[in-house]
Image (cartoon, rainbow, N blue to C red; front, side, top):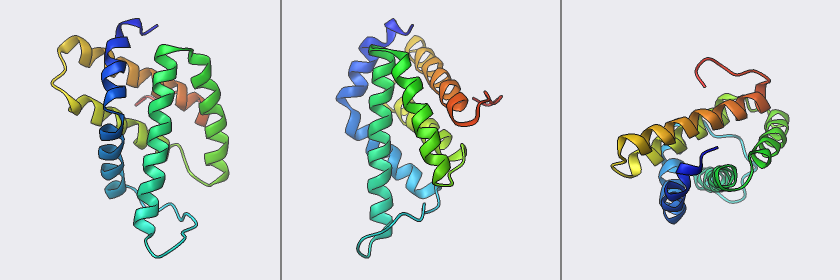
Length: 142
């Protein structure tokens, strides 16, 4: 489906940590504390660590979809949707995380127009899949 993205996926994988940490820093400033069970006295650091872990998993999911099988992505989002709903998190949380991830990716390089369009198409596709898993609907802004 996104065969032309394979070289881009390689670049993204080589820069996984930079993407993930930059996106986590952005999200930390934009998201409220998720009331995670905090061990120690640094809830902001714990929140950042959780964002990094979540973004690393999301990065791997994107890679799996493009390089392996979109059914893996569908199953992951269906599972994740159930888990996040039990935690009381709305669709706004994963949507913001995904949008921030792709905004970070788009800012990573001076992509040419074709690569930028392909990455935006991928972002839209992922958001549609995730929206269906989390809400059962595809929102107009996905």
